[in-house]
Amino acid sequence: MNKFLLPLGIFIVLVALLAVGLNLNPREVPSPLVGKPAPLFSVPRLQEPEKTFSPQEMIGKVWLLNVWASWCVSCREEHPVIVDAAKRGMLPPVIGLNYKDKREDGRRWLARFGDPYQLSAFDADGRVGIDYGVYGVPETYLIDKQGVIRFKQIGPITPEVLEKKIVPLVQELNK
Image (tube, rainbow, N blue to C red; front, top):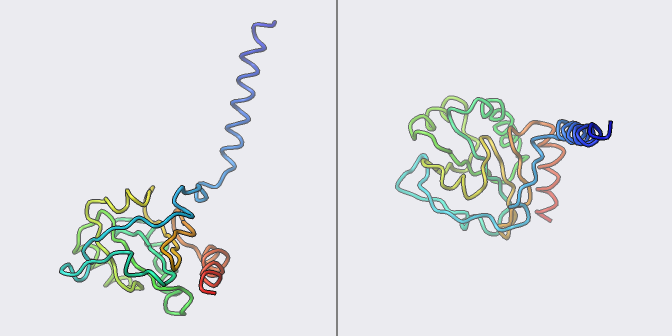
């Protein structure tokens, strides 16, 4: 009887841990970058490859870095939300980061679905995404005036996330 208690106890603990894990929201994975300076980079722009973009250009502004790709199905779900919010003036400047894409595919995608970005940087090989700890696209980072990441959204921005998390935080950071 006693030789079955230890395996039974271990089994119960594992089931309890699994139950707790299944109730967690995967979009709320804590990012080690929140509260730390945004990684610096310099990459060509999607639309103007002769020009580059670096986050240092945004010092003094609250802004969003939205990581997207033309091949990303979830980006199609998110994109109309960003386009609408940008048109309504709900968002700070939004910089797109076209991630592991082909330049022409990214350009066509923006022409077809709208371009809410102040500009899109082009991360062809994904190195910038690696520095930012991108799990998969889309991901969005809210960066404050000092260049510190204040919020990370894993997965598509929904109207609910926009209204309950991003907009209030932008207002707070702009005070």
